[in-house]
Length: 308
Image (tube, rainbow, N blue to C red; front, side, top):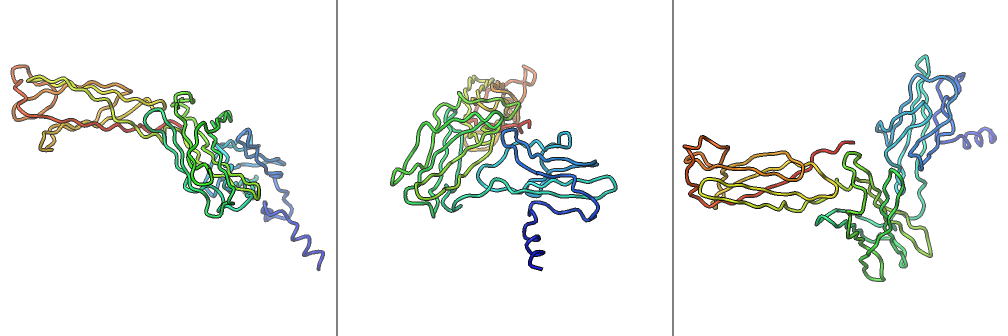
């Protein structure tokens, strides 16, 4: 009986055996290949379908029934990776692993990591010291482009007491890859270290366009008694296609015209004044009249959904 209990304890916890005792598991040696962004396994026998799940959600693309190609692997917080295989006849088999292995006290890791691209050229990330971090803790920030693992260390830190890093800033994001069509993903990583204990890391995985805060468009207007020409330009290193919302108001705040337009970076629009009709598209020339009011304009740009 003691031997039986020992054998049960040694059964791998990553796998659920098939219900049919005569059926050998079709998937063995489930493993991570982070360098290739693969969840891979060894396959024996025939299978009719294989699906991959991350934390219970269908994810990744199955290739040759040998691996799942995933967008990114976490480095800091463990996730559950499960593979469901169905064999001819309808029998099912599941295998799973948790990755990565957790090390150190999670409450020592940097908390509340936030990143934003702002003022066109700057990438700034900030975080808080973990509440149970060792007294000598230090945090290092890295930016990693996931498609080829190119990594940039932080060029400029902001420190708090004990010279602990709590913020990083890149001053010229134009030097980073900016392919909007591929919607490149980046890992924004804060790695902790201490002489006394292991400190887990913290991370965000995003495209830089997702965390970009746009600067206001450079809006100019050229008006005369009957014609107003408005022109603006948007600037971004990571987003090339915008939708604009244009609103023209009187000083009282009453809207005269509100419109949504689509453009890449530059847009010019013309507005005509017609008595009793406000600003609008051009009516016949004989109906043009004096503007007769003071106007204010405002614009708002929004990013179109990225292509993944």
